[in-house]
Amino acid sequence: MQPAISINNISKHYGALQALDNVSLTIEPGEFFGLLGPNGAGKTTLISILAGLVTPDLGHAAIMGADVQKSFREARRMLGVVPQELVFDPFFTVRETLRFQSGYFGIRNNDSWIDEILANLDLASKADSNMRSLSGGMKRRVLVAQALVHRPPVIILDEPTAGVDVELRQSLWQFISRLNQDGHTIVLTTHYLEEAEALCQRIAMLKQGKIVALDSTKNLLTRYGSVKKDGEGKTDLEEVFVNIMSGGAL
Amino acid sequence: MKHGLSRPSLEYGSGFPTLLRKEIMRFYKVGFQTVAAPVLTAVLYLMIFGHVLEGREVYGRLSYTAFLIPGLVMMSVLQNAFANTSSSLIQSKVTGNLVFVLLAPLSHLEFYTAYILAAVFRGVVVGLGVFLITAWYGLPSIEYPLWILVFAFLGAAILGSLGLIAGIWADKYDQLAAFQNFIIMPATMLSGVFYSIHSLPPAWQVVSHFNPFFYMIDGFRYGFFGVSDISPWSSLAIVTCFFIVVSAIALRMLQKGYKLRY
Image 1 (cartoon, rainbow over the protein chains, first blue to last red):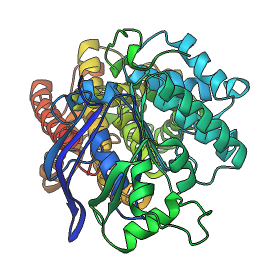
Image 2: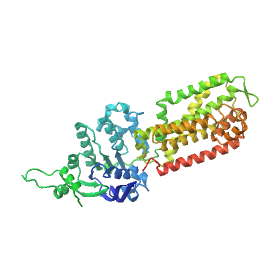
Image 3: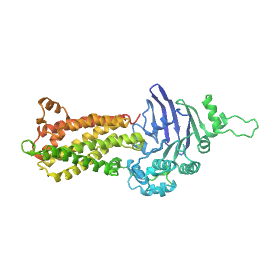
Image 4: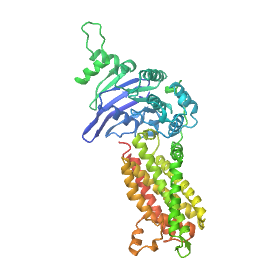
């Protein structure tokens, strides 16, 4: 079976800044994968390369076997991206936004699927509301809906819960977990490490454009966590993250 | 909700028709600003210039008002075609929602064609509005309708392409405003909308021949009156070349992802 995502020797620099330095990574279909790192580590650049928004200087990447540059149509059809910024088109309603997004992917008569997404994201009552009138949380849900409208097998969520209240975070994670159980490959970047620990089966940590840790969540906790003196305290991912970022890894 | 890897087989078409429809819907939703306002502006030009210069004749037989109407129609077509692509792109870039189009499997040709056809559509709608209102002052003759259509389409497509180039190039609204106010507006106003270049001093007649907008207006006007400052075939050749050049630039920018993909 083709990997859901394969990244081979990707490098990217912006002027003097080396955003990504020879990054290689394979994510298998059906994985819930965490991509963690401090601000400026290169997470969004890596996601943007997979989405075709950024062209790498070196290396290549593929979604479900389709090269993101050479076979961009196939690659983009296989990928749904929830961007980090809360962006929206102020001219249109929620339903119009989703119909347009579906149409951009060349999918017509997609209303039954759009209705299903709206229902699952508790957006049905807002379907005919203008995007401008929605709260931040609701706009965030629409971003998720837009990423799903063409039924991509691979979904990347770039800090989807940044600035989102607890209730929405919980419902969003339940929904995303369900998608993963249904077979979707999920790639998540987040600064909420407890979420990554609870959800992700494998985690890669980026630091200054390089992967400094890549393993299952369980192994990372075992290898990089410290044993508490009282023997009761559990190591958490935040501690592992701090240990890896302050020292080295791999 | 079952999909995932065993998702139903989807029939994919092109995203082009949707992008075209979205670009048309975008200006339709604010039609008062994008259609009604430019029609009113053109009517005001006609009322003021037509009144002040009434009694003059152009080409030895046309009233000034009759001469002015096609020029105003074409000026509206050009300015609104430019406004459609440029404002859409700069707004999408500044607000960030252009990412939804960039994430989609659209080629640079589909992107270009959708934006340009929407610009042509808006230009023609506004031009038609100006024509219908100003015709109340005196319906100009229509000698060669095909010439009118050809020059309206090419002119709008050229300005749509220039709007695309400006919208991609500009990072801020004031950069776009500079492009519009210091390039598009003077070139349009000095293209012969309000006068025949034969009424200009010889030196300015020569200068006018370096303005590609002059050929768009002159060829368009030929379709109405069967008379123009230069041969419509010459205008067509120059306008077509200009269209090819600006289209090639716009397409190249889109293909390379200039200021869109990094």
